[in-house]
Amino acid sequence: MPRVFNQKIKILYLMRIFLEQTDEEHPMSVKELISYLNSLGISAERKTVYDDIETLRNFGMDILNRREHPAGFYLASREFELPELRLLVDAVQSSRCITNGKSRQLIRKLESLASVYESRQLRRQGFAENSIRTVNENVYYSIDMIQRALTEDRQISFQYCEWTVEKKLYPENEGERYSVSPWGLVWQNEEYYLITYDEKCGRVKQYQVDKLQQIRIEKEVRCGREFFENYDIGELTSRTFGMFGGKEKTICLEAHNRLVGVVLDRFGRDIMIHRKDPEHFKTLVRVNISDQFFGWIASLGPDAVMRHRMRFAISTGNFLRKVFLITNDKYMIKKNLYIIKIQEKFTPESAGFQQK
Image (cartoon, rainbow, N blue to C red):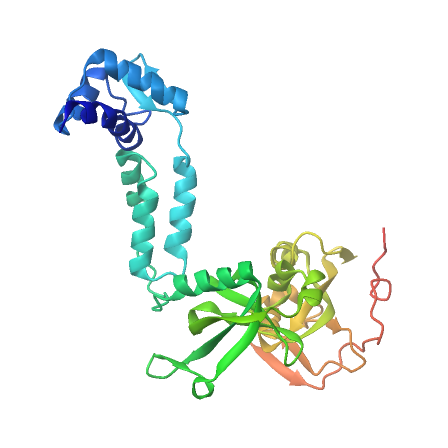
């Protein structure tokens, strides 16, 4: 390697050494830095190494000189600190929409953002690979196509698949292509969902991203802009159970005080909560009524009962058509059992809430 080129590239290798080989517990002396550079075929002297360290500091690298044992220079701060990388590694490892192969690739890239010593800590904290993962390697390309369509304000078309008993994804409706206007991606139940506006029926629909195939960006401009100007996509995840659609209703839910945390985790901190009696509360929330919603109600168990039965109201002129009765040992679904008759105009005042 020519000497001039050798000296020009030396500072880049020195930067890599600080990024990969040093941290607070593993500093390197100037002698060790020179020896490492020599092992790479790059000659260096003490004075030029000191000058290069000062240049890297002026460039913005937080290089400190530790005086006590072990003494030496090290990179004190990085773009991502170790606790932040731990959070990202945990998120990747627990994500069901990432294949095992892609998960390993992403974790290796995250490890490269730490020193070799810290990356070993990230590796040691690893859990067993999540066996319940998508097998669709195209998820990343699907997300990229969707993001491009969002940026370019275009509609997309795709085939939507369902699982067969042979455990294979197969396009539904004989491979029919769905044409929709994409308006966002949300993360719910460890899956990505595409939020769209369907012009044909004039309503919002959501699709599980790892079930999309043959995505194509169309020339047509997206529809539904006026609708989404006043539509909170984030709120959709709190009122939709399992991302299954349903008619949006306001419900009054009554439960034991022990379930306040569960309800707040599900619907957020902005909901109104009213103390019904010393042991029970009630709240008004907006939900999409579906079988999954009733399943969630049942999952609350005996702590969610009022006098041994779950009581809630839906803002409709009809009586409840499905009501869960909860006993100590089993759940039962009854039809046409009228626990609460609902007013057609359901308001916070009619439910006993005092406006502040």
